[in-house]
Length: 134
Image 1 (cartoon, helix red, strand yellow):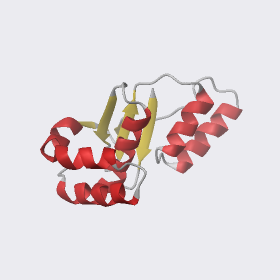
Image 2: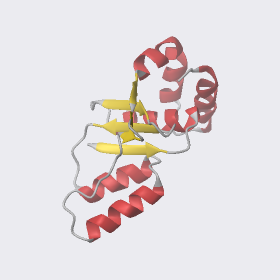
Image 3: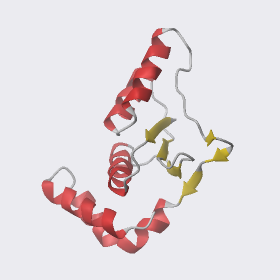
Image 4: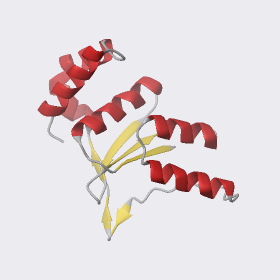
């Protein structure tokens, strides 16, 4: 599993990362959670070698300090260097139903995917971030 930790909780950053994950892993289960510290966690149920997993985490806006810490643990020979805190101060992460949130905006989501990689796609993404309630 690939865990992405987004500490700067803007809707734009969450949507950008979520759509990037969907483009990279189209047939893979992807879950989104609100972390107890007000950020977001994205879980991608894909099995990759450690260094490939870290590369994907970096490309998907994961916390760079977390990536550095994981690399340090990997270099020390720790077999599972990955860390993700699903609880903080006794509070658990809350699952977000992205399908339910995005369904009323399906035409805009379609435009985002159709224009992905172009400036026009960023405009649609910004528009969606202003409209959705997460």
